[in-house]
Amino acid sequence: MNSKVVIIDYQLGNLFSVKQACEYLGYDAIISSNPEELLAADYAILPGVGAFNDSMKNLESFGLVKAIHQYINSGKPFMGVCLGLQLLLTESEEFGSTKGLNIIPGIVKKFPPDINHEFKVPQIQWNQIFEPSDGKWQNTALCVCKPGDYMYFVHSFYAQPDSEDYVLAKTTYGGTSYCSSVQRANVFATQFHPEKSGLHGVEIYKQWFDQNKK
Amino acid sequence: MLAKRIIPCLDIKNGRTVKGTNFINLRDAGDPVELGAYYAAQGADELVFLDITATIEKRKTITALANAIAHHVNIPFTVGGGIGTVEDVNILLQSGADKISVNSAALKNPILISELAKEFGSQCIVLAIDTKKEEDGKWYVYLDGGRTKTKMQCFDWAKQAVDLGAGEILLTSMNHDGTKNGFAIEITKLLAENLPVPVIASGGAGIMDHFSEVFKKASADAALAAGIFHFKEIAIPDLKKYLFQQNIPVRI
Image (cartoon, rainbow over all chains, first blue to last red; front, side, top):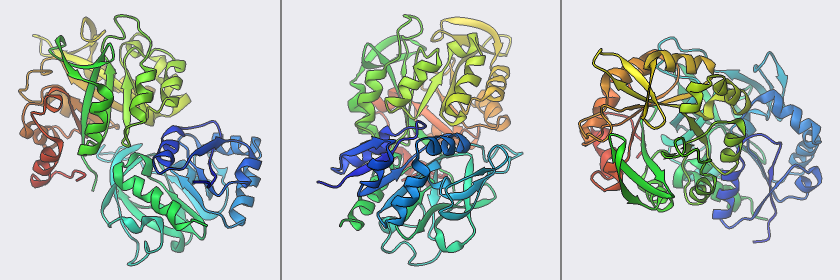
């Protein structure tokens, strides 16, 4: 396959397993911090585990904030994973308030503390994803999923888009029903880690690649 | 609904999976990469592999093995054994491990936990505790693969570690490990119901009902076992089906 896949490297988090998932599907992904390389990509993935403010700082220092906007405006497929979803929002509550990429208007919030210790933070869990309304998963990378499928989550914060239109999947943790996947035009992102969610997760990557073939 | 996790543990010595009884008498249980891939395909929710000889022999971490496993599994996995520095952890995470577990080095130098949590986030820092109930009825923490007794009590140490930033506790009862008589309900329950992080129960699994018991009676978030999986005494799909029938949420 000749498609150019770029995994955006901003010196935080585990990129290895995302690269692994791409390779499994026959795509040789490049891990890069170079804005020009990103702009030349056919597919771009923004992964990430870590702190929101450090991530934005790093993206900024590599010149990637501008490049990500430019890439997304070109209409090419863009996928965010975990922190890579949260960074798409307008701002995060983490450490006061930090500005995000503002591609999905909304805020990133911390799970409320749970006094009964029943729902622990961070959530490190296989949890279920649900379709917000019938048919919403059609023609998206989640078309291979069934409502109630388990995916692997590791996070303390969650995204809350202003508009329900961009909410592609919902998940409940403790008393909080939150957005576990977003889609806005060519931008798709998951709060869970498809690359760590067994064969179901690999299928999501496969759909994303297949549906966006030129 | 949150799924209770089933975690096969691969104890590694000299590159091979081993399983002992009460921390001694090691038997060979096979190639860890092969086993890891097999468990992922079988529906395991996570893998833990621990280099059980690392601390004693001062051996450095099993980076190459972590890398090999990461190439063959698509579920989360934790690596532990002899981890003592931020750099050890950095190398392991870059080799594909999702989490690392610290044990002896953290008790000798608790600040290590906060350094790791600050650098990599609590979500990837698992504190492993080997504990044993003594005749005085108290649970003491042991070091160096169960060879060295300390004065520290299990709950106190777990609480302190969580305050410092540990994101998960992997609790092994030395009284139960390898016995196949069931998990340590009492101490698991104490930690699971009083700490704000997930607790993985380890040691003592012999039959499927032991898993059901540790989830229902001890509120464990996950249950870990080794020998019964390695020697195919319990198959993971059968165990998941059994737990599902017991109304325990599991990923099938």
